[in-house]
Image (cartoon, rainbow, N blue to C red; front, top):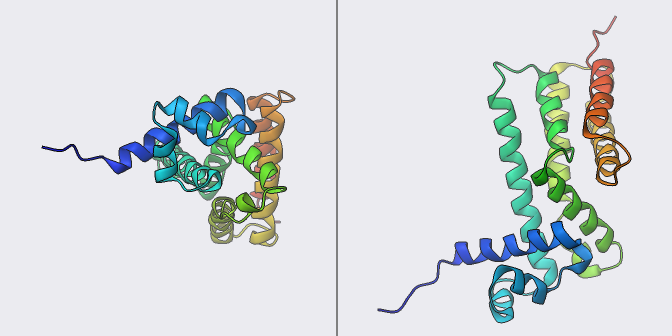
Length: 195
């Protein structure tokens, strides 16, 4: 009886290979060949599942985003009846590279953004959809909480602050704890009762 391939498992194996290469050596070191070697599969198999490096990297970003969302949901599940502020804080805490998983996510996403500046095939991939979804989610929470100011502007500001602090943590300029303190201070101001 011929063996049938588990396509989802193969795709996951290849994606895991890219994540390991990127996490260890940086995204600039990722090639279809390096991913194949890391995943323990042939280059042809990588090319069968992913027609281009950009397509493979987009699949990785989608998976890392999904895992990030799962970690965020777990954070919220640990809270009893979370307030809007706690929901936003949980989202932003997940947006900081504070553990190996979130660190790889940030490293890959930031590297991808830099590569997309000069590689049209990567820029054409919808990698900004994840941050756009997050910004819309924060906007909805802020609008429902009735915070002062425009919810869209405040959501964009929070996300920009979290991304900037995340990069600062990645390069060792700031600790995860000090980055979270800054975010909390900003949330205290944002969610302060309106006089």
